[in-house]
Image (cartoon, rainbow, N blue to C red; front, side, top):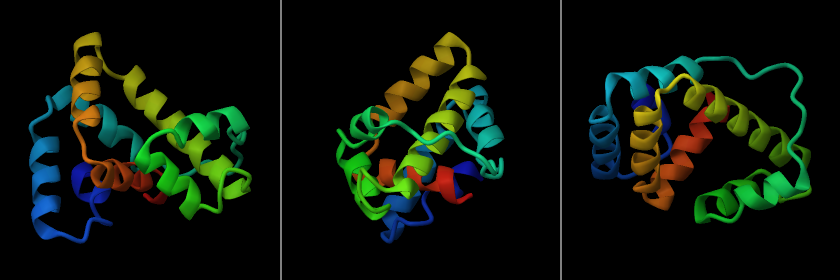
Length: 126
């Protein structure tokens, strides 16, 4: 279910299916840690991400595209969304064992920029 939420923005049906299949291949512990964070509502108050955090987030193709979509590195929307993603990712990773963290890192690093963008966007739109 978490994988389906993450690929809502992927237009190509084959790419969506590939993403869901790759997510389904993750261990139950990794899937559970991610699924536990996705349905959490956005907090009412979020300490906005720093300029440095936004710049670091934007060093990847998907991060750069998202920051641009959110109004650029100086926008409050980008600062809020980067902070939400950082917080939810940290919370999900904190739920994982060391082996699950390694598994998640290998999986996430293997995503295409489009898949990673969809996955990250899902964190702030669920």
